[in-house]
Image (cartoon, rainbow, N blue to C red; front, side, top):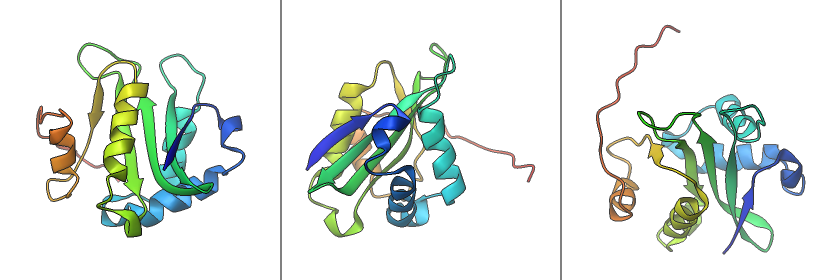
Length: 146
């Protein structure tokens, strides 16, 4: 697997934002969001406004997407990590082959500052995140007004 970092929307032209959205929507399965939310996170990563931005990592094999990561900058530093890993997924037929580990290691290498991520406790990836040094800081709770 070749990993390509994309930090400008123009660099995504070869693959297209919709192909990344569709890939993540399909392969995140029950841990994913609606396509609209995925698209918003990707667009945020390409924002040039101060305090915003981020990047994508695409895991590629023969120019086909087999893994993807979306990192958003938070614009903060001391009380919230500088970056949030919004989405990470590998092709469901390629799981268990170390692709997720490679994507996570490359994400850590390419990210400046600390990284936070939200993960459901029953997600099998929790073990990978802990193995790579992620810690459980607190329990997140949300009040939804929708």
